Image 1 (cartoon, helix red, strand yellow):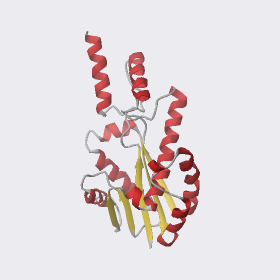
Image 2 (tube, rainbow, N blue to C red):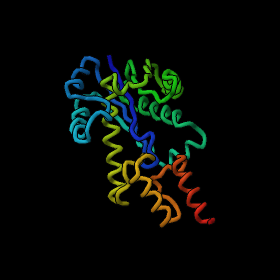
Image 3 (tube, rainbow, N blue to C red):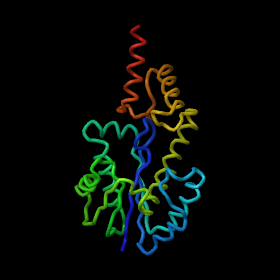
Image 4 (cartoon, one colour):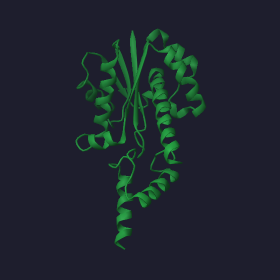
Length: 216
């Protein structure tokens, strides 16, 4: 039986891409992922994720990823929710697989977990069973594997941005380094770079704060 796992990295940050990944494996080979030590990427150190990622790619039958950039997210969110955007791209990953899975496990962003499965089913081109659960990235090794790939790729994109623009932090709104970078950039350029998600409330608040300061 072929099983697939789907997970994302970078849903919450106000900077950088949202990365989604899919991994496909024969159920009988899943033990190899467990022996590798695969876990939800948030439970692993940077060094451990980077160690596991190439090994995961060797173990699984197939893997794919997609990077949804800040500008694309902003444009899509004019018409769709972030959950719907994720579902669309999850379906794209499934449709792109050379071999189709019998069962797909996915970490659900929807409050009612099963709703995310229904969203994905609207966009896939073949029949399969979708198991949508909260904490699927913790409970299913094949989803953990996708989580690691997505996180390593997301971290790689943040490194590229930092190499060009200097220290930007993690990109999360709670990160003081990220907020300091955004405030300074906005002050110096009167605009924000393309890798910033302008549809995020954090960004709207910063722009409003700058506007108020200009008024007074």
